[in-house]
Image (cartoon, rainbow, N blue to C red):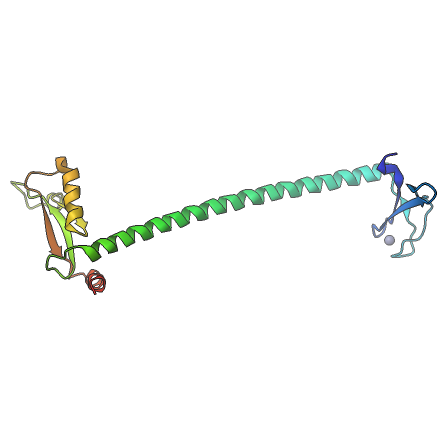
Length: 189
Ligand SMILES: [Zn+2]
């Protein structure tokens, strides 16, 4: 016997109240359908009617439909949560990279020989012959800043082909920049 046949469902057309009728047969312990006689709805003076197969099928489809829609919504929510998660992970790792870069600059400055400047920075200067009074040409002869002499010289060595034989690392003072000067003083305390 299928489960469907083990009970009768009664419903109220007014308030949608449902009553499942089952009979338990004490002699053999089996369950059988209850009767489908009408009775009054506990919520009001209207009769309960047995639910027809068609009605049950229609409601079943409706329920299936709404379950499907909910599943779709959950899938979409899951997708956008996953996207949010990925974006956060990326943002975190970007921040971590920036923080590590800043830390490296600070460590470099802290440990650099300041070469008697209170707030030093280093440039590679590459004076060219026949220099005209042109700001682009001037800028083209300056590379930096670096935060210690070793970094500048490493760079010069690695990219030697970009420079003339006259290129040289030069230490300058950044004490005209109040912020930079304060940072350097703070680091050297
Ligand atoms: Zn009712």
